[in-house]
Amino acid sequence: ADLVWMHWDNFRGNIAFPEYLSIAYNAFFTSWHILFVLGFDRDVPDAVACAHPELYKVGPQRKLFNARIFGTWMMYSVFH
Image (cartoon, rainbow, N blue to C red):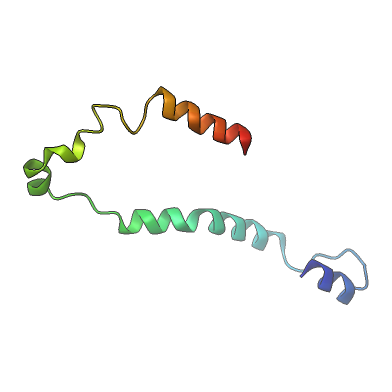
């Protein structure tokens, strides 16, 4: 699209759209999926949580967040 605009504008260096549109696009593009997930997230009902305590075993056992997993994510971030 930039190359097409460049030719249509005869290489004058004008911008194709106001700058606030690109800022709003980036903010929306990077946050829409988070808002989508948060909007549809539902908690487990209390009756189910009390009847099935194994749902929460991984928390106290630190299976989902420990030093190894944290280090792995930090290495992914350095690699990225």
